[in-house]
Image (cartoon, rainbow, N blue to C red; front, side, top):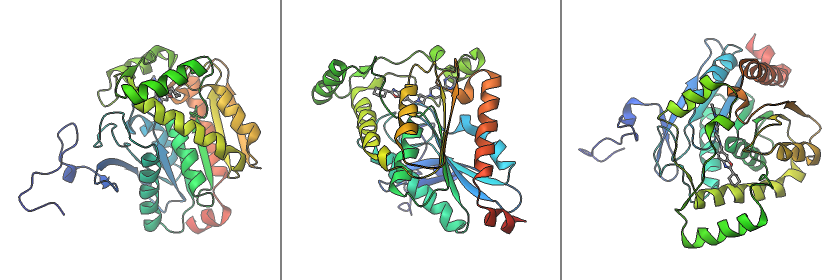
Length: 304
Ligand SMILES: O=C(c1ccc2nc(C3CCCCC3)oc2c1)N1CC(N2CCN(c3ncccn3)CC2)C1
């Protein structure tokens, strides 16, 4: 409870957290939450992990589609993103994203102890999803990954550039690296304009220290992939200029999971779920169908 007479904690946009759905993470930071609750008995829980520089608001259409299938969807803005507290798009340890995700997932599981749990993640949110599922391999009935950050693009992250990034991280960790132009992230101009106009997105350059955390997460995933046995669906565009599709192919080829699917979108850019309308619709159909097919039969009978 806040100290008597203390000023209310407010979001970066100045809204008191007492007026916003939120959780307080282990470091005492307030994380803005969104919930999409079906009218009847939910059949499953779905946690959505957004990517770097964005927030969970743009996943509303996806969440609505899942809610219409009687799934209870929930998400939060990661530390330093959107309406949550924390230094903008910066983190001292990537594990914080995973710890906070598990905190929110555990909270929702405590409220719905009999429901199966899925995770959906995009880009860095895909890396969060993978490492969260690796920490609790028996807890999730499925993981959906949309253009996940799994490995660095060898053309852009050359050994020399990685060496320089590690050197700079010791000397000038707050130095910003170049950021990719949003027009290369989606072929739909309206989506790009909405992304650029969204003031809850972070539009600054990526700090070297943050890039190092992403690289550390990539290295951790390389070690984890040979032990991944949980079910997953991979969706990736082969024209992705940010998160190389070779990472998804490598995960698909090298994980021992016996229930895995990869769908490649020819010409698809990074933000597949915000790409051309026919691609975005296909992504929504693919993931809603895959999730529905992976809900254990016993649960759906309970819901009847
Ligand atoms: O999670 C990410 C993201 C951002 C920048 C990244 N840089 C790397 C490299 C850096 C060097 C080391 C290796 C990793 O990985 C990144 C991931 N993103 C990009 C965000 N998406 C959100 C949705 N987007 C969107 N939405 C609508 C219209 C246009 N774009 C595209 C950008 C999420």
